[in-house]
Image (cartoon, rainbow, N blue to C red; front, side, top):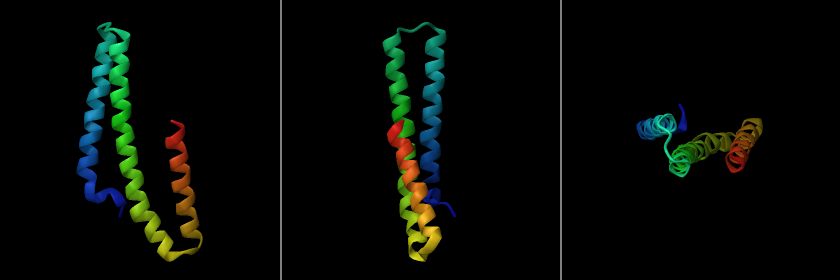
Length: 93
């Protein structure tokens, strides 16, 4: 079972909102809206996806990594490496 199962519906709602924001941005470009207004919406969509990413990371740490740590050994090491790599990807973006 994935760690995010408890708040899956909330994640899906956030993703649907972000999808709507991206469609809105496409429409703005199509309608030749002022660049700064489009950039403002891009920033909002980016923030929405970052919120989803942080929620998933939190769920991963509190569920998957915690379980693996209890088991110990190579499984725990792998989960910690995965989490570290995910954090690095988020920080770089």
